[in-house]
Amino acid sequence: MEVLTNANEACQIDAKLHRTDGETVEWRIFDAPLDYELALRMMDERVAAIAAGTAPEAVWLLEHPPLYTSGTSARPEDLLNPRFPVFPAGRGGQYTYHGPGQRVAYVMLDLTRRGRDVRCLVQGLEQWVIDTLEAHNIRGERREGRVGVWVPRPNKGLAREDKIAAIGVRVRKWITFHGISLNVTPNLSHYDGIVPCGITDQGVTSFEDLGLLVTLPEVDSILRARFEAIFGPTSLAIHAPGDQFAPQQPDSRRPK
Image 1: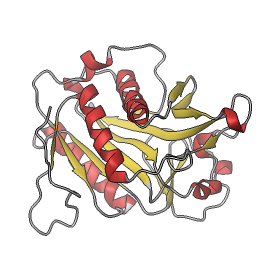
Image 2: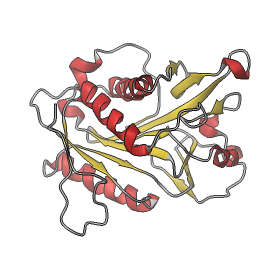
Image 3: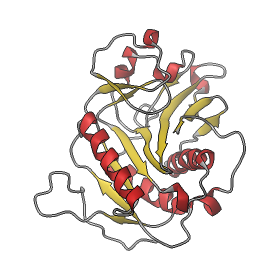
Image 4: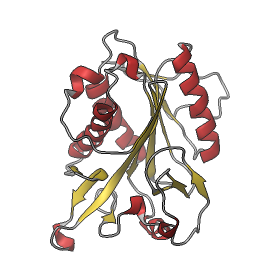
């Protein structure tokens, strides 16, 4: 199954997406940009382990080096200038950009324990982003037929709005992977090489573009709290000494 879509009907997000057994989701923050192909291999391995029952669910927060990804619906004419490497993403959707200053969250959850409702999952991911933006006094909104989270920009003209977050997920054996990308301080000119998500009449924005100067760790803290409100408790991953992908900071609080 591949999903990159808005849900047409409301779901009871909290009731469906919370696990009833209280198990925590492993929360991991990568402190250096992660190679995209390596990230895909790591996700494949983790998804297989979750499906086999040998690893817990996980959320990975990271950045990638500048690159473009193409989903299964990507149109060749939407790749305007391949100034960065282009990778097939293995998810639904079209072209998008990843790079420094953008927080990517790969979300690997077991939907057999969360309602088996992919549309509800997508709504939950959207709400997670909207709640995170709200905590920073940014109004994020859904738009029917246009996947992601959008910010109204009346200063740019009538009915203008910019995309601040993309959402793209894939599901294998009811385990989700891929996830969201949220623009915090990326170089927005890097989007000029593509038609982002195939949408030509709207733009892209970021926390920085909206005048909000925040760091990724500050955003990460809110992301974690808002994730727990929708999906349930998390616990920071424990790594062996010398792990090159160790998290940025120790877990200073108990899961809610």
